[in-house]
Image (tube, rainbow, N blue to C red; front, side, top):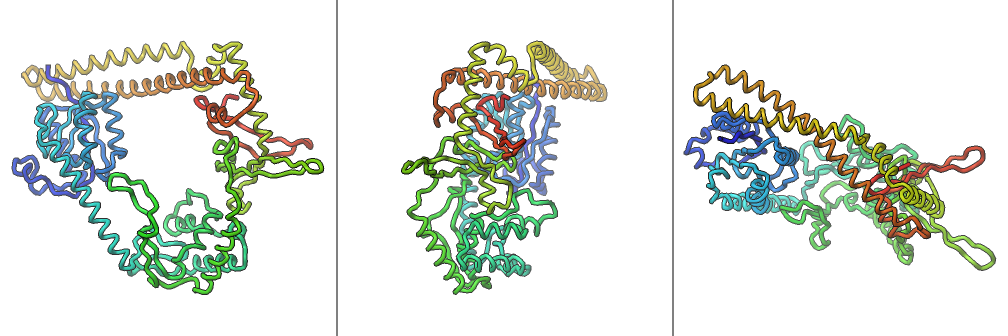
Length: 546
C-alpha cells in the first residue's frame, strides 16, 4: 500500500537566485521569485501534484541559515516527533540550513530516526529515492557561502569603523544619529545636559550610587528607558531607574569627549553568535569623530576621581559567597538579594560577624526603588531548617499521603482522572488509524476511477477535518499526561532526596544547593508591635509546598 504522506512545508527567507539546473529542468519558472510567498506557492503545487496532504506550513522570515534555533524550524521538528507530519518539503537545501555539519546530522540521522521523508525540490533530492549523493556536497557549499558572507560583512564593518563611522543600532546616551547620515553622531540636548550633570557631580566627589540616587529622585529616565521612549510609543518593558553600573559606564565612556571606541566585542565565529569581549589590542579608537559633550579638562578631573576611588577600594576584598548566595530573591521586584557582613562587638574584646541580605535593586538604585527587604541569615537558616525537618518527618511517617497531597496540589490529577484520560487517548489513536486507512483507500479509489473527483474531494475533506480535530485533541491530552508524568517523577525524586535530611542538624551550602531552588523574601512589617516577614521557600523538583 502506498504510504500516506502528511507534508510539512518549510520556508525560510532567501535572497539567493534559484538553482540554474533546476530552472533548466522546469522545476521552477525562470521568473519565479525567491520570496516566502513564492516558496510556499511552489511547494503547495508540488504537494498537490504528488497527491500528498498539505498539513502545515512553517515559516522563518529573516532568520540566518547558520542558526537552527528558529521558531518555525523548531515547531516543525516538534510536529515531526509527534507524527503530525511525516514528509518535510523545502525549496532547496539552503532553506533547511547553511551549516554543513548540522544539515548532515538532520538529513542522515534525525529525519530517518523519526521516519520522516525529506525532499528538496530544486536540488532534486529525495531521501526515499536514495538519490542523495550530492547532498553533502551542496550542504558544504552552502556552509562555505555562509562563512564567506560572514567574512565579507565583518570586512565591511571594520572598514567603516576605521573610517570613523558609527555603526551601532542605537546612539549612546547624550547623542542621536544624524538625520542626514546615520553613521554620524549629533548631540541630543536633553540627554547631553544629564551627562554634563553626572560628570560635574562626580568631579565634586559624589559616589556612583549617590549620583544614581539623585537622578532617580529627580525622575530622570535611565538610558535604556529614554531610548525606548524616543523610539517606541509603548511603555518600556525594562527597569527605568539608574543604577551604580549605568552611572559608572557613562563616566568611563570616551564618546563624551568626541572619540569613538569600537570593535570592543564580537561573536566567536559565524556559527557561534555568543558575544565575547575582545582584548584591548583589537579595539579601534578614532578621535574627534563628533562634537564633544564634556571638555577635556572635566574628563581628566573625573578620571582622576575614578582612579582614586579604584585605588582606595583595591585592598577591600570583594563579596564572598554566603550560605544563600544566588538563592535569595526579592518577592516584590524579583531582583536578586545581595549580602553584607557586619561586625558587632559583644563584650569587652570579643566581636561577632553577622550576615544580612537585602534587595539588590534597592541598593543599586541608590535606595530609590523597591525597599531593602533586609533579613538576617540566622533567621532564614532557622526557618528553612525547621521546614526541611517537618517535610522529612511527614514523608517518614506516611509517604503515600504526602505524595497524594503533592500530586493533587501541583497537577490537579487523581488516579481516576488519569485512567479516564489514558482511555480517551487509546480511543483517539484507534480512530486516527481508521481515518488514515480511510483516506488511503479514498486515494486508491480515485486513482482506479471507482469514485469521481467531486465525491473524492467531499469525502477526503470530511475525513481530514475529523483527523485534524482528533489529532489536536490527542496532542492536548498527550501534553497533559506528559507533564503529569514528569511532575510525578519530580515529586518522587524530591521525596527520596529530602528523606535523607530527617535528622538535619546543621544547614550547609551543599544541602542548600541540593534541596532549594530559590527563596522569596517579602518586606518586613510591624503588626501589634511585633516584626513579621514572610519567607517563601521553593524546593527543587516541586516548588513551593506550603
